[in-house]
Structures are given as C-alpha cells and as structure tokens.
Image 1 (tube, rainbow, N blue to C red):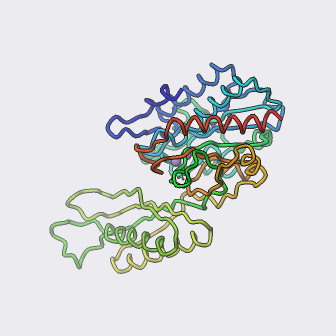
Image 2: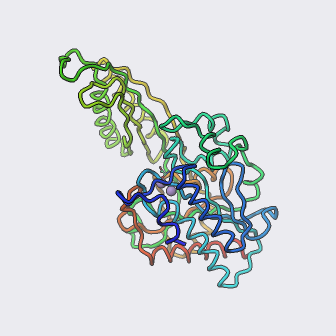
Image 3: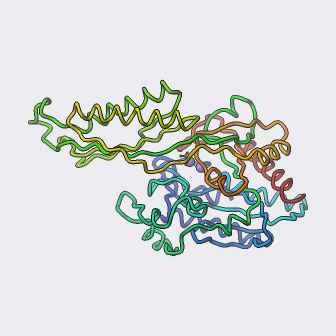
Length: 395
Ligand code: HGY
Ligand code: MN
Ligand code: MN
C-alpha cells in the first residue's frame, strides 16, 4: 500500500509532496483510496463534501467506529503527515481480519479532503464542512493563488460543488473517531515510546497581513522618500518572533507574496501569512494582537498601510477523557501528550467522541521532505490501532 501511494504527487527536485486539494495528485490519491477499499470488499462511498469512506458493516447501524486521516499535503510536505494514518487504518483492518475479530459495530476508514488548506488557505475544509464549521457560502468564496474557486476546482475533479454542506446525519452515526498520525515533534522520541495518545490540540490560526506601500524605482528613489512595504514586513517578521518567544507561543511567517516582485522595483504590496499557536487562547490572542500592533506602528513610520485578516482559526481542542482513557487502558503505557498541530480529529471532536494516536517521529521534523518514521514504529502504530479498533468495535 505504502509503495503504491509513495510516488503520487512527489516532486523529484525536492523529494516533497504537492498533493493539493482537487488537483491531479489529489485525484490520484483518491483513486488509490477507492482501490484499497474495493480490494478489501469494503463498501466505498464519497460524501457530499468529497470525503471518502470505506465501510465494513452497515453504516446505518449507528455507533460506528471510524478511523482514518487525510492524503493531501503542504507544499513539499513529507510522506507521512496524513497518509500514515490512512495506510495504517487499512493495515489495522487487515490485522483485525487476520485475528478473526468479529466487529459488533460498523467500522469505517475515512479520507478527509483538504486537511492542509495548502491551496485555498483554510485548514480542514472537508471535515469542517461535514461538521458545519464552514458554510457552503464560505467554502465557495475560497480562491487559490490563480484565482480558481473551490467550486471550479471540485468540478474539474469530477465532484459536485453544489452538494457541499453540513452532514449531521453522517456524523451522528459515528460512535468514536480515532485518527492515527505521525507525531510532529520529538516528545515520543524524548520519552522513548513508539506510540502516544493525544490529550489536546493547541488553539491556532492563520492571519494574512497586507502591507500597502508605494511602487517606485529602486535606483532613483531616495531612502527618505520611500514607502517600502518590504521594510514593514521584515520588521513584522522580527517582531512576531520576539513577541512569540516572550509569550512562550509560536509564530511563523512561512508564506509571502510581493507585487510586482521585481528586483529593481520597490514593491507596491507585500502580503505575509502568519501562523500562530499557543497553549491557550488568551496567550494566542495576546501574541497576535501584539504582532498586529507592532506591524501597524512600524507601518506608520514607513508610510505603509497595514491590514490584518484572519483566514483560518481552530480553537483549543481537549480530547474527551472517556475515549482517551479507554485508549490508554488498551495501549498500556503509551504517554498522553498535547500537540500544536491541527487535525481533522480536532474538528470532529466538537461533534463526535474523538481520540488520536501518534507514531514516533525520530527527528520531529514534519511539513518537510525530511519527515520520516521508523518502519518498526509504523508497524507498532498499526498494531496499536488494531488493538484500539478491536477493543472498541468487538466488545
Ligand atoms: O497546520 C497544521 O497544524 C496541520 O498540519 N494542518
Ligand atoms: Mn500537516
Ligand atoms: Mn496531518
């Protein structure tokens, strides 16, 4: 399974993946999912939001145990973030069957669409739509860097954009959702455990900063006459790092666009995207407000107009203790730990009992071609997921 998926959407130059929502690579990943489902005789379906489901047992029987993750990636992402959860779900099902387990509840494997938000800027579109945390109107307003709307992208991929919307009936049939994911950090490596259980997801969000200056000639404009948005942007990046460090939070400017983006032209507009996260909402709000204030104040000095727009936000997720403790009981001494990474499980936790398993990442590196996990740890993840599915579905 892993080897079949590995080449899809992989960039030879970087070794990273570009599996963006509704692109050819995404469609190929979806085709892989359908083939895996059908080769196991599972009932395959695509829901109104384009999320893929593979069922063992009757979905309408309620109280289903569902596992899965996502297959899309960040630009030049690694092979494990998302796919490890989906491949492990199919492998865990195979393991259950080889054990002769007899599920008394329906089981399903899901691939949630557009978890990374790499193309349209909003994280977890598939699960947010299903959970009613994103309206069809908001989704239809999403545009990619080329101005292509979500609806057009879905249509080109053969999906009906008019069908999208909340799916409460589907979520009501889920008794438990468990997502296995490669750890994005080194806590397990430092603790010497191959598998961990999630306690919480930090609140986090994405804010777009627009720095409006004045286009001019790089070779003839005196420094004192410039209204250079690149200067304000650069100072904002430095301010963001300082404010985050002082607050024990995280702040990253990982994406920037410059107009007109000419070597010998002072820009008219610089857009920078801030990703900020903190252990609690109050800290996060304070850090973002301080970064915005620093940007505006610097803008006043530079004659640059600064506008901040929140584009994506996920409040703190505290995974339900009952399911979390049930997993802990099933998995023995697996540590319970928080994460700063968002997941579909975080979105679903508002609607259904949800839990997460982490597989050790020896370097902690993620959202990079260098992301890796040891095969033994991945196999331990499959065994742990099979133990959890058996414990939950074969009472
Ligand atoms: O950004 C995140 O935390 C996740 O990888 N979407
Ligand atoms: Mn990710
Ligand atoms: Mn992920």
